[in-house]
Image (cartoon, rainbow, N blue to C red):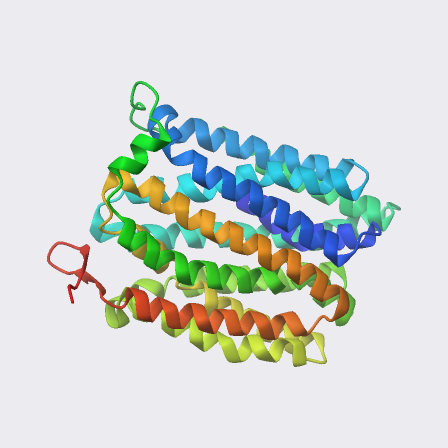
Length: 388
């Protein structure tokens, strides 16, 4: 349900802000506020996992995501919209941190690549549905006499309802009882043993996140205001990208068996770069849509493998902290990228794409340089690191 909401809002939210008279810089600031809220949550959350358990945190995340987007659709003024982005970031940070650790904890090592792949596929398939809803619902409402801005606002409200409604299935998650007593952050740090893995994950994660923040929050604006796409066309393009990623993700386990975890991540990221560079050069909507589709498929199909790389072989007690710090790094870098990207997009809809490609290339190279010694032992299906 959350991913349906993500799909709806990914289609219309930035367009709504722009059509409401706000600038690209405000769109970037909203993304930046989201990232700050997410970063703080990712740091503060790991000790709470042991205290309150996954289920309650997922319910809180659903409420934060839903009510923040609802508020952003209804409140006037850029300041309030940006401030509510902080609350949205709390929900997103909780989902990013808790979700990955929960999946890793509840699957045997040999099944984790497949579990992450199925999870990724289900989420992007739901985003496909959401993107279609986000694209066509404003047209449907417009056909019965609703103004364009009101139709976009109503669509955001529906997306927020899907996000908040995800608390219903979250309430039925079965999980072991949380540990009794308060687990302090200091105690978690003292017990943490995975500093090496964490440091090597943070470098490529932050490079790629900063690059993504420069352009990805503004895809809908690029399509509508540079290439003249309608909202329903934006929705169809976003939906096609989602379904393409869903199908491509099934190839991730096959690639990981042949190229290894790191080889799969680096290869797919590098292959996406030529298509990314050609996006701002496109003069027609069909060409741009095709380039975005291929780029998105190649860049994102290895994320299930990357999630496994981040958690495999890490002690169970360390996983929430590893994921939390990695997501913290991602969020801080996304903050910087999106705030800068919003200001660059106000000047040029092309320059940020080239900068994104440069950061993606640096992220892929650093992934290989820092994580190439990590391998999966077939006999035990655990990740070990070669010693120099």
